[in-house]
Image 1 (cartoon, rainbow, N blue to C red):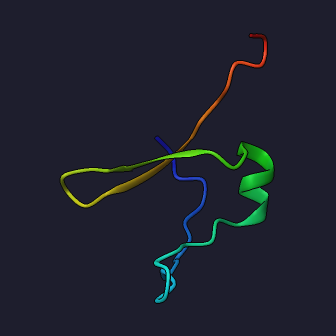
Image 2: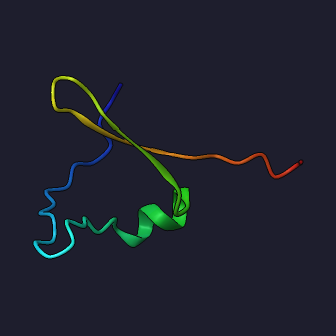
Length: 53
């Protein structure tokens, strides 16, 4: 799989938040699965909803 872009993000100290850039939210929506793998890799996967139902 080809990497489209990479961001360096630092989590907020107070609430441990990471801000997702607006253009990603505009393209993929606000709902994501947050997968943490055994090797420490984190995957943020957009949730797609079937709008026909």
